Image (cartoon, one colour):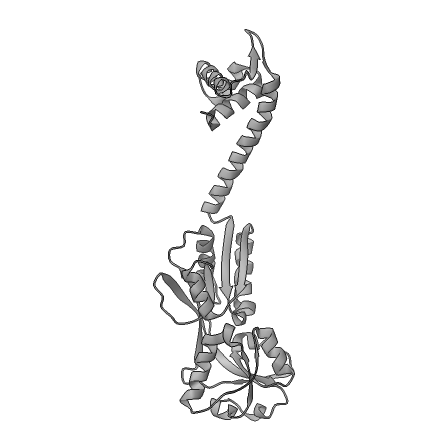
Length: 299
């Protein structure tokens, strides 16, 4: 049976053109090396080496076989190296789900540090709503998710990233800018720009529960799937939006921000991952997450 040992024996003899030198290189007895070469020749039913009492040379078939043997051993070495690097979390892939409001001021710095430490890890990002991420974690379509919490799902671990203050973002000439803080009662009859239901269902549910508690019906004038689109609509005067303070601070001077007052006051952002994952690259990312100075910071 053809195996790596036989290939290494043949390549050593072909390199040295001497059984004595090849045996020394391989740290094996010369008779054992001779038997290995004979075993290889019998297996492929061809003579690879022509030898007499003084000389060893490659046959024509031996020259052709040597090229393939080297390629096979090189590929094996690459495969072994890749396996070791993947086991150490130095090579591989991480699939990350995220909501847009955590991308700029938390996820980007985290991934920057991670990629400097693990430059050969391929990172795939998926912009997904909280409910979509929960399902994707259970199905193992993503490895890690950054979403709204809290929640409890069997087999899924979570950690709190931060508790977000909410603000009302509006054009800087909006009538509500005279208020120091804004409640749902102040937004009665105001046009709202909200993230779309398909991507922001959990977020909207949390916000609108506060409206319901105070008997206010939200008036949704516009919806958009992304953070940039929401702010573009607000900037165009289409309405006001309720958004986490963290990403809102990147808005230009054309916008005004006022605290949004809720009974529970904060919006919790979490990281979640499947407990059953066996991906060292994911473990390395979670180590970076645990060491991040941004974890636990309030906004």
